[in-house]
Structures are given as structure tokens and as C-alpha cells.
Amino acid sequence: MQRSDINNQQDVRDLVDAFYRKVLKDDLIAHFFTTVVQLDWEKHLPRIYAFWNSLLLPDGVYKGNAMGIHFELNEKSPMKAEHFERWLKLWRETVNEMFKGTNAENAISKAEQIAGLMNFKMNKQNTGKHIS
Ligand code: HEM
Image (cartoon, rainbow, N blue to C red; front, side, top):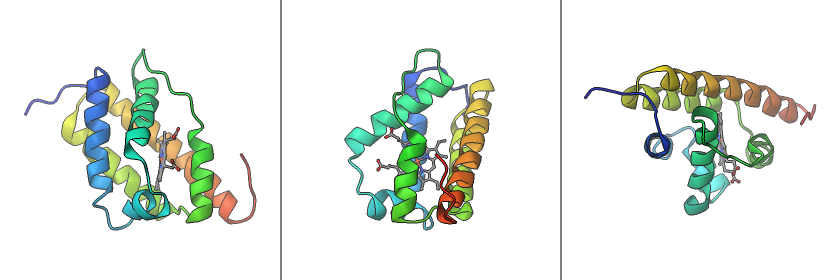
């Protein structure tokens, strides 16, 4: 199949849905989404779509505090480097299987930046040096 770039909101939805199908089967990180937090997927998914729309498309609007939500998650169950590595591996795989182009590359590089910062902040929180 010829892969095209992430061009519109439907592409973002398809990408996020495929990513979560992998996440929910993953031995290392699925439990965050199923046990640590019992997600209401009808509320959660639109927020994730909005987040990626706002990062990748000109018309996206995300109003939320993505970092803050993970501080709360991290208090319930520590998020460690290995979890972030797995999250990123699944994200890279999903993007590369489905899309090709500048926005696909952006989706990966932005995730890498945010995951790197998140990992750093969660690690600080876990070692008692809270920064927001
Ligand atoms: C180990 C890695 C990660 C795990 C296990 C994880 C898990 C979760 C969980 C369980 C939630 C729902 C929390 C709740 O509603 O109470 C959530 C929300 C969210 N996550 Fe992550 N996450 C990870 C990394 C990331 C990264 C790297 C990004 C961004 C690139 C990200 C973006 C988001 C966003 C945008 C939300 C929704 C925030 C909102 O409701 O406004 N996550 N995450």
C-alpha cells in the first residue's frame, strides 16, 4: 500500500486508534490504561485526537494539561524510562506503518521531544524533586 502523509483529522484519528490497539496489547504499558486508570474511552480519545491535531494540523485545538495528567498517573504507578521507550517504539511503528512524509516525521520527532521531557519530569517527581 502506498503510504501518504498525515493530512487531515481523519488521518489523525486513524493513527491514534491504531496506536491504542497496539498499546492495549502491550505487556509493559497496557496496564496504565486499563488498571491504573480505568479510562472512559469516549472522553479520552477525542482529547488525544485534539492533542495531535493541534501539534500536526493548522486547525487543531487542544485545551488541556497533558503534563499535569501524567504527574497524577505517575503518583499512582511510577512511569519509568522503559515505559517511555516502549510507548515511543509503538508510536514510531504505528506512524511508519501507516504514513510517510513531513508530518509523519513531525509526529515522531514531537513525540520524542515530549516523551523525553515527560520522562525527565516524572523521574524528578519519583526521586522527590517535584517540578511542574
Ligand atoms: C509511558 C508513557 C505513557 C503512558 C503510560 C501514558 C498514559 C496515559 C494515560 C493512562 C492517560 C489518561 C490519564 C487520565 O485521563 O487520567 C494519558 C493521557 C494523555 N497522554 Fe499519555 N502516557 C504516556 C506518554 C505520553 C506521551 C509521550 C504523550 C505525548 C506525546 C502523551 C499524551 C497524552 C495526552 C495528550 C493525554 C490526554 C490529556 C488530557 O486528557 O487532556 N502521553 N496518558
